Length: 382
Image 1 (tube, rainbow, N blue to C red):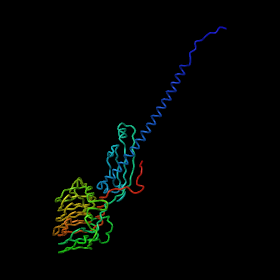
Image 2 (image 1 turned 90 degrees about the horizontal axis):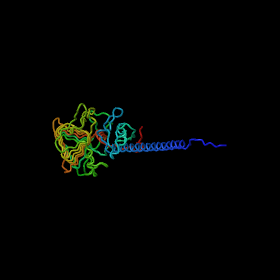
Image 3 (image 1 turned 180 degrees about the vertical axis):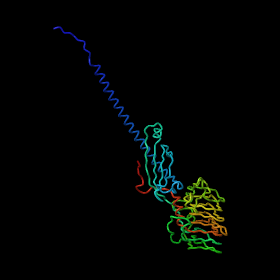
Image 4 (image 1 turned 45 degrees about the horizontal axis):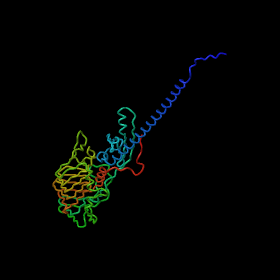
């Protein structure tokens, strides 16, 4: 038989094309899986960095706690304090959030953090990461041990119509104070200190000559020193003559005014919850009207005429008061005057130094710093 060769096309080309398709699919799948892994890793990195920024933000908020901004806000849900968008200390991102006051001592910090890459992603409407955490903190009041209406190292002379009263009292018009405690010491001085009266001057309560009273009593309060308090002062002024009174702007308490030291005479007013730490670098002379909080005086403190102060006064020099008639210098809380020159503390006119646990506690509470609770303080919020 005759063999006839036919012209049949081969299958090499289809097989090659099929192989290219399969290989391309495998390569595409590999690229897709790798891209997904990259995205997962990037997202995990952003979440971790955002979490670190949120933690850094809370740590910074605790470290730089502002008693004026946070301690005196109304209890939740009446109000809250806003933490503005702030760059993290390491500049790895930014954080913001809110601070809620749950009661007089407990606060909740609600902070959200985002890393720098996430902020850029948000600007281009792409994916970003944000972490939100909360921390329960409590107020740690200053450990200033006020044991008497007047504490001094030198002699004290009470003249005119002046009164040093160790009876625990609630300032006029103040509410929500605990009942007054037992009577306290009127004057606490050194073993060599002498307390005398003349005219209608009166000392109500015992005089305690404390052998443990020394210079450090007036400059060291637990783990906080006088200089530490100076560093935390909201108002710093040179020595001089000042008239201090509440100041309002648009009906709100103007805390930027350096002569606004709160409003103890009107505790329900706009400045009634303002208890600043005030530091005077030198001698201070006051001639009206009032103040509250913690007053630190590097030198002597002289009160002329009518003046009322609610809280704690610490003077490294001498305390002098003067006035007459209806002029009253009234201190509610506790006064510590070291009297570094060991001269006589001159209290004349109608000066009244009255011990007040309520005024002392409110001043300490309003100026205390924040500290995390010992356990179960941290939580991740969603």
